[in-house]
Image (cartoon, rainbow, N blue to C red):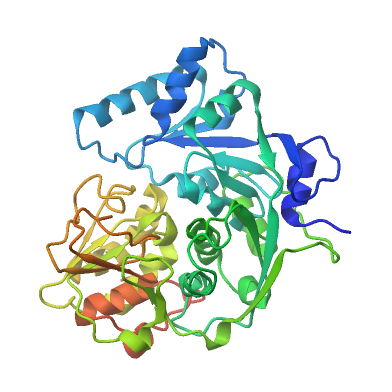
Length: 432
């Protein structure tokens, strides 16, 4: 019996032997990350154990992205401690405004195909877009990685999802992940790996592939992994990553489940009712009034997401009474969007473009708090009750294109029904 991609990566990092789902292994970790909302535990554990020399701290990134900028004294002091710790032990530091952890790690060249990467955040599954095994751990686990370079893992079962055919214009990877959430349910892939493949995935650009891998966290997945191709290799090379070691599944690999999706038939999707798995096609709910629109987060704050929004909103104004916030995933994304004229286009349309960070997504900064009964449409990954600070409001989640189209009309709108809504990445941006 052959092996899945996850089994091969874990086996290679656990001494090179063959491992199968259910095995428990101790594996060497190539890179680790901890952000400011989880760093406290990591720092306390190192102090508690009295370790002076962290042999593997140089393979770790400290990212100041959740409390960005710090909303109170306690958060500011966490940042002070993280900066001092990173400086003392030689860890990488990404400061306020540099961006969201899941964006800056691949941008910084810290991972490549075949790597095992852990991060103190559930959306560390994002790294699977680059044919790496990325998974979420606790801050104390990152302490162990900095000390020993290793962690233990139970090898997960794998679900193989084949996405057939190319997505229609106006439909994105976010719509694929929402479709799977609607089918499997939240946490329907608990402690399993999702192995994405198929012509539909191959047709996606890297930004969309990162969305596909990122959103696996809402399914409870341990990881989500894509096969590597020319696009993957070129992107990694452009960002200074180490030489890739692509990993493919064997033809006779064992999967606990196989799913097929015809991407060409999918309409844009939305999740509603405080549930990530209450998913319905946009055409079925068009006309639902909205009050706020949010584009950003680690799921959909990349350059192509911002291009989608600008393609729809350039030269227009968002609907009266609607407030719109755009949060780029990183400083690099922000600068690229500025160079292409996207920031100007969105600002002129009535949106507020913020510095890169997670604060708006999880309501740490308080920049988007809806009133009672108000409706937010967001490209974030979660719409849990009260997530934006008011349990009496509603959050609908969708692609950036659907968010922008809805901001334009003031109601949930199929992006295919508005000018610019069928923009494709093959275009050269929409610079002014």
